[in-house]
Image (tube, rainbow, N blue to C red):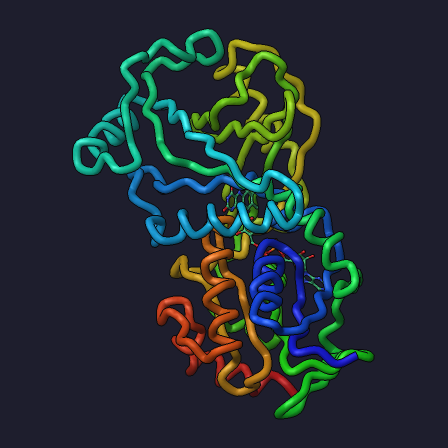
Length: 355
Ligand SMILES: Cc1cc2nc3c(=O)[nH]c(=O)nc-3n(C[C@H](O)[C@H](O)[C@H](O)COP(=O)(O)OP(=O)(O)OC[C@H]3O[C@@H](n4cnc5c(N)ncnc54)[C@H](O)[C@@H]3O)c2cc1C
């Protein structure tokens, strides 16, 4: 079999990259091992325009959010599913300091923040002692639905197996893997990228996140609720509750500690009954400087990477997949702060490690 591109991984990155390469009339094969606990399969799907305790505007959000909305609507219509919807965040203030921080930011920039007048609105559901603000517009991506529907759509171009990098052969023009010959291989392998021999010297800063799914019949599905952690309407009476950020971890397994702490937090927070129905953990492919890793290796020129989306895969991957596909198909430039050529010196050293 001869294709233009061999893509490793069908998380949100491999999904959008193959989608845009196809639009650019490129042929591809995707190899994905169907691990149910990868970042994209565990993610909530939130696109939040503000970030962190200081509630600052998320990097590039004014460009990537409208792009993402449009991209998910088009992908959803091709897959016959509702891929994205508006779900604003009700941001409860856990402390008087957080209330002050929100009000302070609101005075400076009101583009995405508001302070609703009706501060008793959620009193029947939450112990919200210090009130709340609202973050809008926010989007919620049906990421699990998209990944499985897209997988069925590309079934002819998909090989469900673990890619074994030891079997990869390459020369100047062609990649060889088992019976596949490809013009290039592009790794969309998420957190596994941090151990990929071609790219492991890039400054990855992978971190672990844990999540609970709870059944809660009385909580409204109208919003995402944030109170230290997020409660995200998942489907019917199910909420996604998470997540943690751990930089020092032994494995990607869920822990009793997170479960116990989160249940205790929910008991303090919620006035309505709930039941835990699932618990998962996954590793985020985050990077030290919080910018993606995109482009081709400076030494192995037909070996590429599309990775490093960190906590923002849902908003960043459509925008940059389209940019990368345009770069591949038409030679258009990659944005300098995502292009891996910024690590040319480091990556050139990688070649010493590869036979
Ligand atoms: C708990 C949690 C919550 C999150 N919530 C959000 C959120 O609300 N909004 C948001 O924007 N982002 C969120 N994120 C971050 C988001 O999940 C990531 O940015 C994004 O999913 C990364 O996508 P990816 O395709 O790069 O990696 P992945 O989703 O990890 O996909 C990589 C794929 O490659 C495959 N693969 C790897 N190695 C091999 C191999 N050797 N052979 C075959 N297949 C292989 C894996 O099986 C996987 O399918 C969250 C992450 C976590 C952990």
